[in-house]
Image (tube, rainbow, N blue to C red; front, top):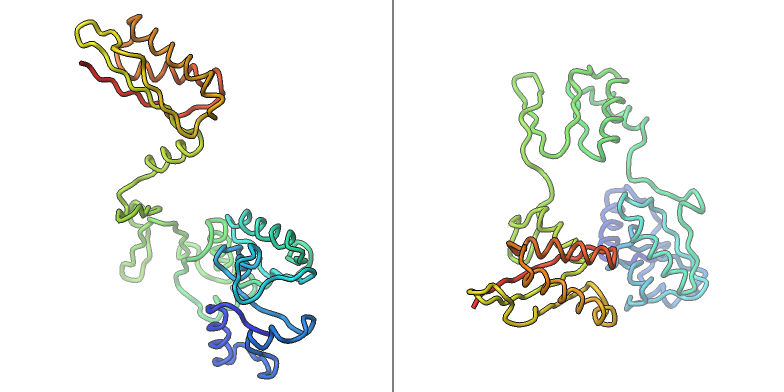
Length: 297
C-alpha cells in the first residue's frame, strides 16, 4: 500500500507513531515504488473522500493529477459517507471517475463506510466514565445535538443540567449552575476581496438574483422643460437573453419606455421599472434586475 497526499501521509505517520495504526513496515511502500509494481498488487490510499476538487481523487477524476493517473478497470473505493451538502460534488466526482473507465465502490454498493463518529453505545460509555454534572453537546446538526442530550439523560445526567445550544447562544456559568444567556448575532461572515464582514445577506441575495436572471439597464435622457425624450432610450442587457431574442424583445421594451415617458403618468424611475418588469415576465417568464438611469438636459 502506498499513501498519497501530504495530509494523508502526515496523518498515517502520526497514527503509526502513536500506535493507533498498526501496519507492518513491509506493507507500506513509497508512492514512487508503488507506481513501478504490478497494478493488481498495489493499493493507493489518498485524499478526496468528499469530492474536493483539489484532492488526489478530485484531480484523478479530472485527469489533472501529475504523479499518476487512473487506468481503465482501476477500482476506486470511497469508504466515506457524504457530509450533508457535499452530495452533489461527490456525485460529480464519481461520474467523472466512471467516465474515465474506472470502477467505483461506495457505501451505496457495499457496507464499506468507515465512520469517524462515535456510535450511541460509545457515547454512553464515555458519559458513564466521565460522569459529568452538566452536559452540553457541541458537534453536529440540531437533531444530532438533541439526540446526544437524550442519551446523557438516559445514562443518569439530570435533565435540568443538560443544555442544547446553537450558534450565537450564550451559555453562562454561574457558581455551580449553567444557564442560557442572551442571544448574540451569529452566522456566516462573508469575505469579499479585502473586505471582511462588510457585505450582508441582502447583497448576496442580489448577487444570486443577478446570476440567475441577469440584468437590463435603461438610460433615459429628458428635456428638462418639456419632460420629453431627447433621444431613444439606450438599453443594455447582460445574462438575460440571447442576441437573437434581444433583436425582437428590446425594440418592444424601448417602445414601451417611450410610450410611458412621452405619454405622461410616469412619476419616477420606479414606475418605469415596474412597467418593464411586468412586460418582461409576461414575455419570458423571467425576472431580470431592471435599472433605469434618468437624466435631464
